[in-house]
Amino acid sequence: MAAKRGTMFRPLAARASRGLKIANYWTIAQLSLGLLKTVRLLPADKALDFLDNAARRLGPLMGRHRTAMSNLRAAYPEKPEAELEAIARDMWGNMARLAGEYVFTDQLMRREPGAKLPSNVEIEGEEFFLRLRDAKGPHILFTGHVGNFELLPIVAAAYGLKVTALFRAPNNPFLAAELLEKRTESMGELVASGRGSAFQLARVLETNGNVGVLVDQKFRHGIPGTFFGRPCETSPLLAKLARQFDCPVHPARCIRLPGNRFRLELREKLDLPRTPTGTVDIAATTQLLNDTVEGWVREHPGQWMWFHKRWKLTGGKRRPGTRPSPTSVE
Image (cartoon, rainbow, N blue to C red):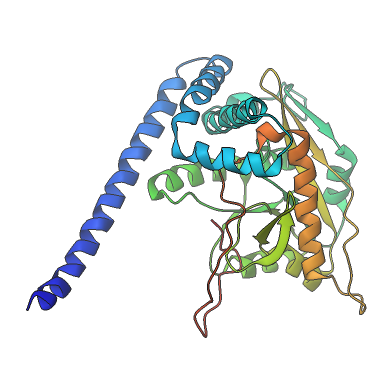
């Protein structure tokens, strides 16, 4: 009888747990959005500096800080603890600025009459923006979560280069809705990661369009590889699209500079590894992407999100007959 009562109460407990989770998401979203609306009352530079300073103090109190420090120790075993702590605080400052820049995008990206770009943005590789804008045929651009990576499609649009960007919405549905609205206003065409997104990107490439992909997140049941010398799993999506369409793949990144300034870089296409039959090698290309992003992070370690569980391996076996989403990340 007791076992039967326990079985009856399980659905109620599950619904209660989901309700508490939704309530928690709503509370966090309201607090976060309320804070951003408040700082919007300040001038952009002062507001972003305030968020940066606050995050450097509050970030180390969060549970994710332990994950960040553990990842930093593994990535830089030769560095002293104080230097690793400084990198982690830089990371929290960068993440706070990124959040604040959603609010101030219109101010940060304001251009003087006749200017192609805002005065606080400098470009390396302008010729590639222009070449891709004028060239026929599909192209893939990739980047990582470094600096303010959201500015890349905005700047591409300033050059007349249309890019359909793949993005992953936050787990918090209330924050996700707000961020999607802001992103759509400034970034143009977006594809949310998840089931069916690979087909949407393929359709863009089929019509000689351009797609942008972030490549530095954990991917369940992904391609085995390494990042900072540690085993990891990476999405094969970009490599599979490059093999299917045999199109150029260009690295692009944003570097945060002092004084709320940015440098955006677009580079020549990568020489992708090939199999003996001449097709793009999926595993080797995926590792090449890891190596490229690792080089960026080593140059500016405080501008990458070390609290991400990039090296957490899937473990266990997939249930028979199931396949992961081609853009399933954590």
